[in-house]
Length: 152
Image 1 (spheres, rainbow, N blue to C red):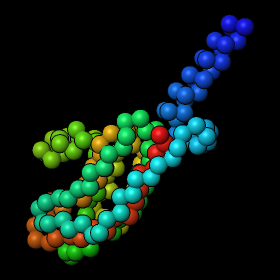
Image 2: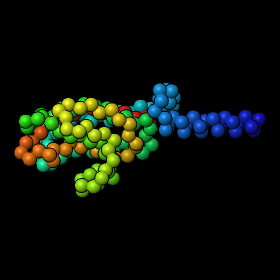
Image 3: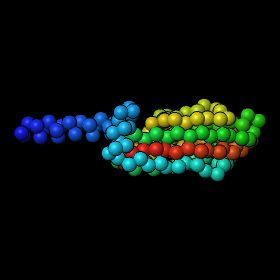
Image 4: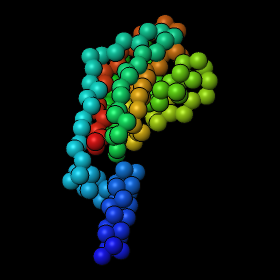
């Protein structure tokens, strides 16, 4: 009897660990049953990014969130190339990037007019950055439509 109870407890702990760290379809199905899905919308009016500058959207994912996915699209207009660079960074990497140091990105679009973001993120504070530091004269306008989905 005691062995059966221990087996059930170990199985439940293993299932909990697996669903909190796995991005598999099976893990998502278990999370849909055991946790509630949340959506953090990141739509905005067009973001103005001045020449030699950047703009950002800061968003917070709760610390106990799992299976965090940021998905969305953006479009840049302005200047001769209608281009922008987009990054998704953790809070620490955002500080490093701002200061010209190496920074790890969860997403890096390169110089584009239109981009699609689809990345897995950890819980915590993240930044969606639109970089126009390469443009000496032209401001850019960036329209973003997206959301961070997670389970809690």
